[in-house]
Amino acid sequence: MSDGYVTPDGRTIGGKVLEMRNITLRFGGVVAIKDISFDIREGEIRAIIGPNGAGKSSMLNVINGFYHPQEGEILFHGEVRKPMKPFQIAQQGVARTFQNIALFKGMSTLDNIMTGRFTHMKTNIFSQMIWKGPAEREEQENREIVEKVIDFLEIQAIRKTPVGALPYGLQKRVELGRALAAQPKLLLLDEPMAGMNVEEKEDMSRFILDVNDEFGTTITLIEHDMGVVMDISDRVVVMDYGKKIGDGTPDEVRNNQDVIDAYLGVDHG
Amino acid sequence: MLYREAGDFKKSYAEDSQTFPLKLDRYGYYAILAIAFLVVPFVINDYWASAVLIPFLIWSIAALGLNILTGYCGQLSLGTGGFMAVGAYAAYKLMTSFPDLNIMIIVLLSGAITAGVGVLFGLPSLRIKGFYLAVATLAAQFFLVWLFNKFEWFYNYSASGQISAPTREMFGFEVTGATASASSKYLFCLVLVVLMAWIARNLTRGRIGRSWMAIRDMDIAAEIIGVNPLKAKLTAFAVSSFFVGVAGSLIFTVYLGAVDVGDTFGIQKSFLVLFMIIIGGLGSILGSFIGAAFLVLMPVLLKNIMVGFLGWPSDIASHLELVIIGFLIMLTLILEPHGVAQLWRVTKQKLRLWPFPH
Ligand SMILES: Nc1ncnc2c1ncn2[C@@H]1O[C@H](COP(=O)(O)OP(=O)(O)OP(=O)(O)O)[C@@H](O)[C@H]1O
Ligand SMILES: [Mg+2]
Image 1: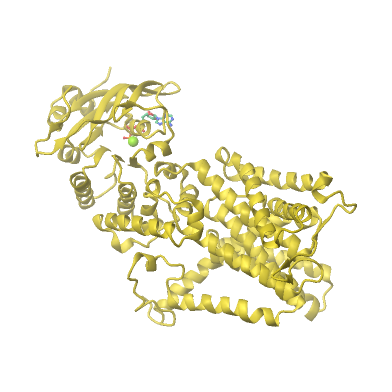
Image 2 (image 1 turned 135 degrees about the vertical axis):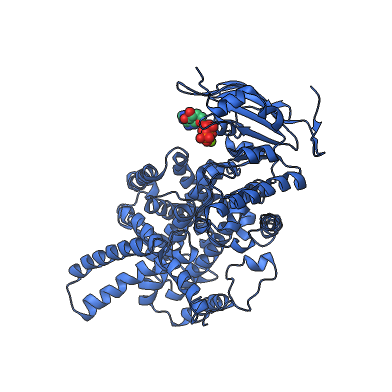
C-alpha cells in the first residue's frame, strides 16, 4: 500500500498514525462494532459518520481505551498496541472531546485548559511543594502554551470564568481547548458541533481546519451535519448498525449506494 | 470602591497566579503574620493558649489535610480521627525510642508515617466511591482506635493504657511536657501551621492539585488528559494523611501531653474536622482556617455566654451547643454550599464594585 497521498487542496498526507484491524466490540448480545478495519493517516481530517446508534462513539472509545474490543487489533504508529488504560493512551499523545461535554465544572476556563498540559508536566511532588524554582518555571512555560490556545480559540474574556457558568457553545470550545493544549498526535472529536447554531458551527469548523493546517494535527471527528463533514474532511468512514458501509473521499462516499440507502432509511431486511 | 483591583494590573503570568492577587489581601496577610509572630507570643496567657489559639492552629492543620482529600480530590473520609491517632502514637513511639531526636523532626516523621498508613487505607478508593468509600474509611477509624487499645506495645505496656509525652526542647525552650510555656508551645504550632499552609497552597495550585480537582470533578475526563486515577487518589491520601498525622502528633505532644485514644481520637473528631471544612469551604485553604476557627471558638464563646454570663448549668449549655452547631451546618449547606470562604469571595466581589451596581 502506498504511503500517503496529496489532498485536492494540496496538503501532503503521511503514513498511518492509527490502524484498526477487524475490530469487533460486543456488549452482551449487542454488537456495537462488527469487524471494522480502517486507518487514520498523519495530517488528515478523518470523519466517522453514520445514523444514531451506528457505533461511532464506541469506535472512539475503543481508540482511546475506554472500551476493549473482543476481536481485532489496533496499530499505533505501525506497532500493535497492547490493551492499555485511557490515561496511558493519553500519555501516548491521543486527546479527545466528548459528545456530552466533560469539563471540570469546579474549575475556571484557564484551569481546565491547563489540565490539558498534564502529560507534559513532569516536576515531582517535592518541587511542587516548594513551588519556587522548577515547579513555578514549569507552570509558566505551560501557561504560555495555554495562553496561545486561549488566543487561538478567542476565549480570552472567559479565562477566569468557572466553566459551569458558560453557555453550551463556549463550553464546547473550552473542551476543544483542553484537548488542543495537550498538543496531541491524534485528536478525537465526538460531535464537536452538536447543538450549535450556524454561526457557532462555522467558528468550530474554522478552528478544526486551522488546527490541522497550522499544527499539522491529525484529527478524527464524528459529525452528523453532512454539509460540514463533506466540507472539512479528507476521508470519511461510514458506519451503520456497527458495520462499515463506506470508506473514501467525501465524493466517493456521497455516491456510494449503501450509504445513500442507509441515510434514506431503506429497509435493512 | 473600598476593595479595588483597578490599577492593580498584572504584567506576567507569575503575577497573575500569585496567592493574593490583590494588594489589599497581600497586606492583610502580612499584617496577620506579623501580629501572630511578633505580638501574640508576648501577650498570650495559658487560658488563651489552651482554650483558643493552640487548638485553632492544630485543628487548622487537620482541616487543611481533610480538605485536600475531600475538598480538592473529592474522596470523602470519615477516618480523620483514626489517622490523627496514628500521628500521635507514631510520635509517642519515636519520642520514647529515640530520646535525642528533635521534636520538630518527630512531628514531621509521625506525619510521614501517617501518610504511609493513609495510602494503605486509600487503596480501596480506586474501586469504591462516594458513600461506600466513606464507610470504608469509617471502618479504618474504628480499626485504628481498636488497634491502639488492643496492642500494649503501642503504649509501651503502661498500666493506664494512656500515652504521655516526655519533655522536649526546641532551641532551648520546652515545647512539650507539663512545664512548657504557653508562648513556646504556641510558636511551635504556628511555625508548623505556616509551613503546612504554604505546602497546601503550593500543591493545590499546580499540576498535582489540578489532577486532584480533575478526579473530583469528573474522573473519566481526568483519565483522558493522562491522569492515573490511582496515583492521583493515593497522593491525595498520602498528603492528606501527612497533614492529619502532624495534627494528631501535635495534639498529643504539645497540646494535651497525655492521650487516651478512644477519648481523643474517636469518631466525633472525624466528624468535627469534616464539619470544619464544610462550614469553612470545601476546596479552599482559607476555608480550612475559617472552619477551624469557627468550631474552636464557637463552643468557647457559647460556654462563656451561657454558663458564665447567663448562669445556666453546664450540661444544658453543652447540649445546646451541639444543637446550635448542627443548625449552623445545615444553614451553611442550604445557603452557601461552598462555605464561608465563598461568602467572603462574593462579598469582596461586591465591595470591589461598590457603590456601583455593575
Ligand atoms: N457501555 C455500553 N453498554 C452497552 N451498550 C452500549 C454501550 N455503549 C454503547 N452501547 C451500544 O452500542 C451501540 C452503539 O452506540 P454508540 O454510542 O457508539 O453510537 P453512536 O454512533 O455514537 O450514536 P449517536 O449518533 O447517537 O451518538 C448502541 O446500540 C448502544 O446502545
Ligand atoms: Mg455517539
